[in-house]
Amino acid sequence: MTPYTTPNDLVLTKRGLRFQGQYFPCTIGKGGISSDKREGDGATPVGIHGIVGMLYRPDRIAKPANWAVPIRPGDLWSDDPHHEDYNLMVRAPYPHSHEVLRRADPLYDIVILTDWNWPRAEFKRGSAIFLHRWRRPVFGTEGCIGFRPDHLKRIAARITFGTRLIVPNSLIR
Image (cartoon, rainbow, N blue to C red):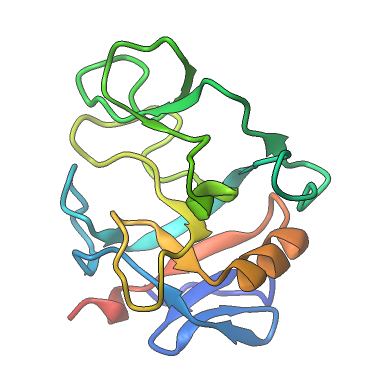
């Protein structure tokens, strides 16, 4: 895959994520890069992924972009591949498998949503791929892409709905 890219695309490279002429160090899935993403494999999927939303913690940070949506108490993300709400934001109480978006740690203070396996999720293709804060450098994610907090804020302030996340096949080892 060698798509035509623009400076407004987020392009994953061996040096980090390239965006608007800069490189940002980042972490990827602990399962590496995969062209055959599966539920629970911890891999970051190859492809051209649209940016479809942005969430943020209004009690911790200023609104990072005018189109960002606040994460409220009780906001969850369904990660139950057997349920019809799989890979969608849901509200508590929710009895099926889910991830809490309003976390005690700062990992999800900003969450940039991609269109991976969304809006009509395919069974076992894996839940959402987010761009969010990293735990620490070189600490793999569950498939998402993690950034230093100041870099994530800078990226969040500059992306638009036309921005794409591009993960090329050439990164597969």
